[in-house]
Amino acid sequence: MTGKQKLELTWIGKEKRPRLEPRILLEDPEKSYHAKFKNSPRPLGKPPRSGITKASGEGLGVREDIFDNRLIFGDNLLALKALEQEFTGQVKCVFIDPPYNTGSAFTHYDDGLEHSIWLGLMRDRLEIIRRLLSEDGSLWITIDDNECHYLKVLCDEVFGRPNFVANVFWQKTPTRENRTDFSAVHDHILVFAKCREIWKEVRNPLPASESQLDRFTNPDNDPRGPWASLPAHAKAEKGRRQAQFFTVITPSGRNVDPPAGRCWLYTESRFYEMVADNRIWFGADGGNAPRVKKFLSEVQAGLVPSTFWSYQEVGTNGQAKTELVNLFPGETPFSTPKPEALINRVIHIATNPGDLVLDSFAGSGTTGAVAHKMGRRWIMVELGEHCHTHIIPRLQKVIDGADPGGITQAVNWQGGGGFRYYKLAPTLIINDRWGNPVVNPEYNAAMLAEALCKLEGFSYAPSEIHWWQHGASSERDFIYVTTQNLSAEQLQSLSDELGVGATLLVCCSAFHGVTAAQAAERWPNLTMKKIPKMVLARCEWGHDDYSLNVANLPMAAPQPLSVNGEPRKAKSKAANPAQANLFAEDDDNSGNEPEILEWGENT
Image (cartoon, rainbow, N blue to C red; front, side):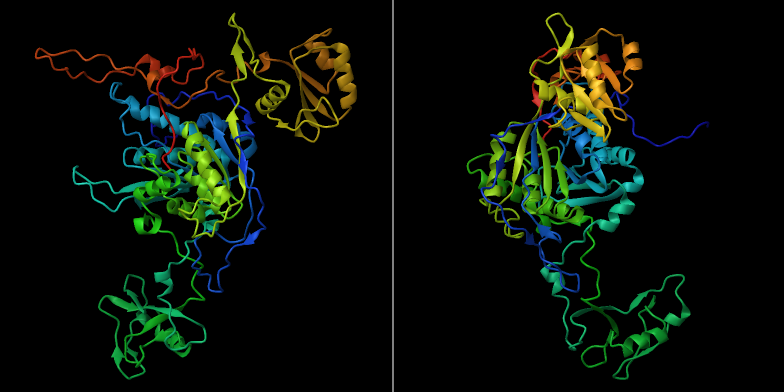
């Protein structure tokens, strides 16, 4: 074999990638919402000296009202692209509950394309999510058995196998389904870190439960406080020293040897040092087998999360439905919502107050509601109309302190904060009646300037002093956007005002009185680009929907009938040529509005 080989997951159309337009976000103040008051910063419960706390999982530090959360209405792939410039490397936790790809939408389509389309759509989102994550950030994905194992391998490819953290089994229901061959009672939560070596040093342990804390007592009034006892012996594996095999004499005079196949945890000399330090417990009468005392004050701060989360700990789909019914009486709840307790545990492990949480499959808005109650900043994206019918009313109740369900009591949530509502701007470039690309007339001057700043890698920050300064990429590199046809005199004036040592990208409809070569020589501090020619080859303009459009999928050929009138099973065929154009650059964007299988999570 020649060349370096690697193991990877392949699928039909994997090489096809969308050239996404980085849209700007437009706030709708009428849909934004904030509390009528601002709470004073509230210190969160600090753990006792032991590091073990009965706290609900808010985290440590100070919880302050947060008003600059974001709810974005629009296609979630375009929304992720829109967030990329501003939030790259800033998101601490991403929780997503993508569609589980049960196949119900693919009855009439070529077998084998279903997984390919789903994987391609997920891959494009995961790659942007990884760029958005901070170095100590993590991704949590709820998924069922239909696509879990494909998704695991895909995430290995995007994040790297060393950054796989865990596959958590969540017991989503305690009941057994007896009408099938196997009753599915769990979902998976795949956990990946941006860099596991960093993440494992900062992730939070779980708070101890009441039953776990009750194990610590102090029957001998030890001044070091409550303790729990553990066996003083271990498995006698290869490598154990002979000095760990000896007979212990208890205070009552009884001889005790380690059980068969086991040895003491310590050598004889070290064991009796522990006895002298009152760290070995022989029972109240001094005649029991020895046990090691582990003091509450000395154990690690909290519990290491396990990979099995029972319904008693984090709730069920049924409990989540009840939470939604209480919020929206008389309405049919989402099919598989996630309980607030489940999201609470994820956010507790992955973040601290003030950290940024992202959910690009917002569904009913559980992630944002829980993050808000826990004092985290959040961004949610949702395309479905339930963004307006469920998410906004739900968040308004959270902010007003009128949501008594979920984790409200556990974290002592009393209301406050707010969020801003955004929608994706329309595409920047459209075709006029003659098929020529032009700037979308829906864009005003400010929108155009912001859009070109994003496309050219500048931060949009209009200057109050310099009329020509719409954004900057550094302290000495600026951008100016205008739809005017600039003359040589205007360009000279710009160059003079800019001065030596600074540079300006001038985006204009045209310039006259000088050629491009002459302009570059005459004004070395200016760079001229023409609108819209400068951006035409950058993106797929006019592509507003990257969700799963059933009508855009390749249709399967009609099956021929057999002699008895039954459909004859066809052999597998090569992918329809249309499959290669799912993300093609020459998408004709016919403007039809096909039925959409929404890409919204069910939380």
